[in-house]
Length: 155
Image (tube, helix red, strand yellow):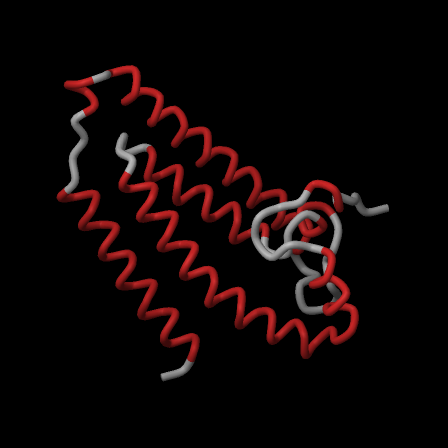
């Protein structure tokens, strides 16, 4: 089975599991502590909003240039995979909107695992396409969790 086929099947299984969690899961916070319930929902909405804005920002930097040259400024100067990072935030945010702690944990872990396989495949492609330039980028910019010390804006 090819790598992309395996990723597609894993994504489908993960999506089915997430749907089952949402359908079968429940929260007890409304009966125990409404403040916790509302806080979890607010954190979820904030993460979804921040993730969506971040995806738009990262997409603006890479759109139309992905195959032509390496993008190493803006969000790509802080982490090599900002689109995956912001998508992960959206997934965790959706999990928090269920007003539970287990849904964001499951969603975050599952997305992190799926992204790991996608990132590995993309790194192989970028290494062959951009060679030494990509190797230098690998040495200075973290894969997933951002480092703000490297942030640079384009000219």
